[in-house]
Amino acid sequence: MKTFKLVPVFLLLILASCSTVSVYSDYDKNVDFTPYKTYAFFKPGIDKVEISDLDKRRILHAIDEEMQAKGFTKSENPDLLINIFTKSREQVNVNQFSAGWGYGWGWGWNPYMMYGGNQTTVSTSTEGTLFIDLIDAKKKEMIWQGEGVGTLTKNVEKKDAKVKELVSKVLAQYPPVKK
Image (cartoon, rainbow, N blue to C red; front, side, top):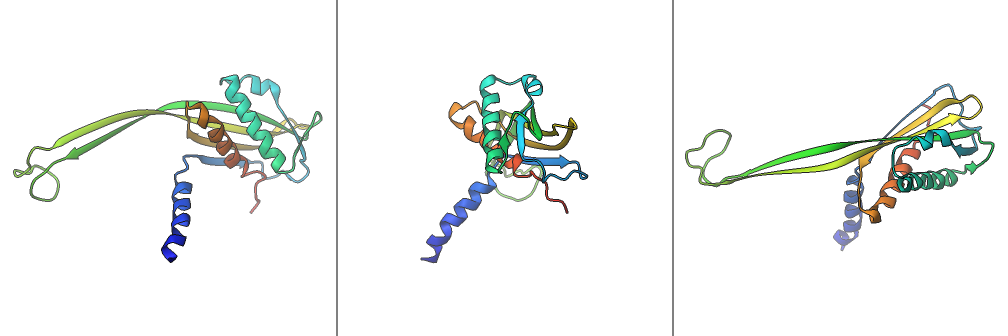
């Protein structure tokens, strides 16, 4: 009976470990982040981002949700300006699998090796990076930058969830915890 209670916990750990998103952040250690309560998007910077308008809206919507969940308010006179930047690169994965039958252990030539098979598979994927910059609106200085890296999908049904996961994990690091 105890085994069945552990199965959901085990499955949850497996799913959590399968996340393909890596996040990083950097910030100005001299800044006090507590006074920042309002935000707006930095339109000139966001207009320069070279992604589809649909993906841009997905990202901005996810940032809106995360910032509001943190207690921030969108404002015409903000404390913070939010800018985004993206980049992508193609990943090529080559996997080679050799299967042989016969006697013996180890590397090298085996006179007892029977006919086996070699299989090589090549796959490509696109890795995307999203940078979220938080800029002090009065000083016009970047005070925090978050970076999220993950595999992109062309599946429309999965895009919203992927973007939300990426933005959520990046903004989970804001405000920074000073040590």
